Image 1: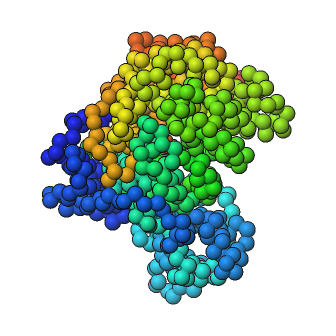
Image 2: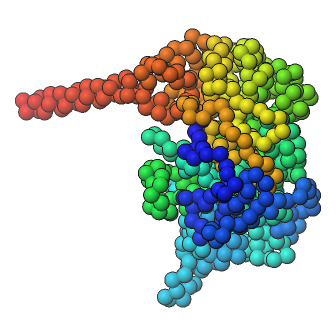
Length: 617
Ligand code: SF4
């Protein structure tokens, strides 16, 4: 558990929130830090911290179903409909061009965008008067740092087409009320170790959702994962989840989901800009500097059940994988669900390459229904089948539908699919029935002969009324060991951001939280994987773990990891994928590569000498 250094229990004289050390408090986009009495829950400003504001508790009201006002321009369906209504026709792909330009300029206001576009256009045509040095910059005119866009940096990409004048006029029309970003960051809190930042994003109607940035730094490279919300609250009511206590207030539009990426991108860009600011964590930030200003993975594991907001989530996923904007690999977008079978199948049909995570949490219907009330609608076996279908969908399509039904694939086909497709089971570790060793056997059997990854998630303390606990780390190890004996890859997920209530299951609007109780479970113990690590990543030993579909293979891999780490504590598969990969390299791949290179050089030198000698003769 990647717990923070500061583990003191909250006291009445200590503000519960603090100003993130890595973020600029002068940034007008971010309103920082609220001081809340941890015992009464009442909010109060702290006199010594002028930038602090008061986070008001919102009454439990639903989101209005009226059209949004102002309208988020990142909602593509909304924009297309408004263009149709206004009679503005664009050539195919011109909306993509517009979004690409917007992304390159780091999402300036609409007016700013139009002005910059016109200036650039005039400069290109040589219409600017001599000496006019305005324009011709790919950065936003507000000076914000442009996002690196892999697509835009790629050589050989075609030029962006000119945008029609009618479209620019359309954007300027105030009655249409399109704005680039409709939400704002109300609060940003960073964990003590600087790895995790939780954002409270206020929507235009005053509702607040949460998004969590997780920074992963490793010798092989740094990356950030963003956990996004898809709904305000959640209707599923899982007993262990703080969000479930809120009930459902409404859905987020696709634009509002994507805006969470915009906010996260700005904060990560500030990370780099303020790199040499604070002494604390400066080493870590220096390592992040080169490649850490981009979100590389997005997981729909924030507030809400994403498949209950299917249309908007799918639209947002399309924006994320759009090569002109965020350009995320399909497999780096993960949709997590407690199991809505029709929508799971729809996702398989619409976006089969996107990863799907099933929050199972119990291996039999009775135990599952006790903690996931909505589970009675769908039998577990059918859920696993739907997940399996999703995993095999890409392989099936590549084989031209020659594969049989979901259960009819050969071991080799499954092995191939496991490398190409991501499908995983999430299993929260709660002290009690569902974490019993008998359940471990049931879970192992359920996943037997399928190339699924099981993620064990240590329960994070929340304020839900049943006082739940996380089992001991040793118990989770044993649970994991049993599941792996069935040939299923099983990892224990590392918890990040527990000290700022940003870990799995802890997301809830702060004003509704009660006093946090003591932490339990896995504090200070060794951790094995982060949120987006899976067996199918092409990093380190995780890849080989993915293909280890037999118990023997899993055991072999575990032994190798143990010996690589000098024995002692078991280092399960999938853990710390990058660094495990390093140790494998250091073990035998690297010497072999060096020996091959030396032999090849000798061969070439000998050949050259031989040819030279022949010529001399
Ligand atoms: S775990 Fe997910 S589905 Fe269940 S209540 Fe929480 S947010 Fe909703």
